[in-house]
Length: 117
Image (cartoon, rainbow, N blue to C red; front, top):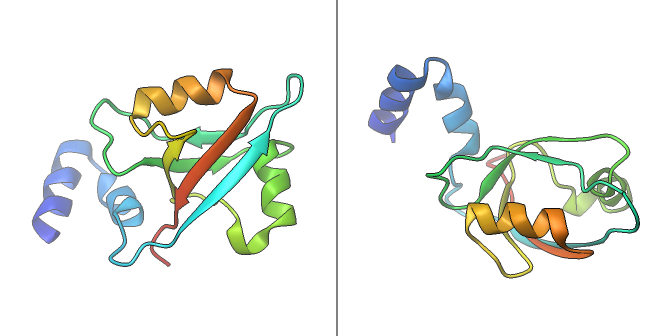
C-alpha cells in the first residue's frame, strides 16, 4: 500500500491524503440507505467520479438540506459521511450507472461502505 500511496502522490500532488482516507478498509461495514425523492428534492451526495473508480464511489461531501442530510439526522448510526463509498444504487454498481440512477430514480436504494475509522 505504501508503494501505491507514493505513486498516487507523485502523480496527483496532494492525493496521498485522499487515497489514505478513501482506501478500502480491511473490514468494511456495509449498510443500505433507502431514499424516496419527491418533487425536486436533491439527494445531496457529492461523489468523486473517475472512469477508473472501482470499489464504489467515494463521498466527497453531503449537502445540507438534502435527502441524505435528513437521513443522517434521523439515523446517526447509519449516517453517510465524507470518505464513505457508494457501492451501488438500485442494484447498479458501475460508476456511470450509479450516477444515471441517482439522477432519474424516484426511489434509490444505496449500498454504502464505511470509510476507515
